[in-house]
Image (cartoon, rainbow, N blue to C red; front, side, top):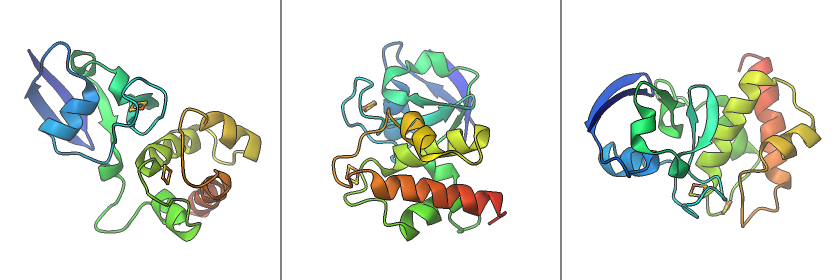
Length: 156
Ligand code: FES
Ligand code: FES
């Protein structure tokens, strides 16, 4: 079947199978490989994208459900070669090691900061609880999110 959606401000019209996941469409058909397949069953958050304003596990979304949706992936964050403040904050706080989880954390962070511009540590931990990281121990990720929030509030 053919579906249409918007991804990173671009209109897409694409043929999909009814049982294909949005993650597979993004990675394999649109070559947007920022969203990662970790668990494939909604437990790790590595595949997080923003779907109609909310963070979702794209491994759990069937491609036909994306018909008419507005989707943001990590590839859409930088503008004119300049990284987004959240990306800069993750680099400055060294909030990753292998980096596999990072695009998912960044997209969950973006969705959160759009609703909660100055989250407490407790809120950050709660809102990012669907994203797992095997490497960092999370402290530096919380630091990065606080730094990102500061940068965005400061207009940077
Ligand atoms: S790959 Fe989607 S939640 Fe783990
Ligand atoms: S940096 Fe390796 S899983 Fe998070």
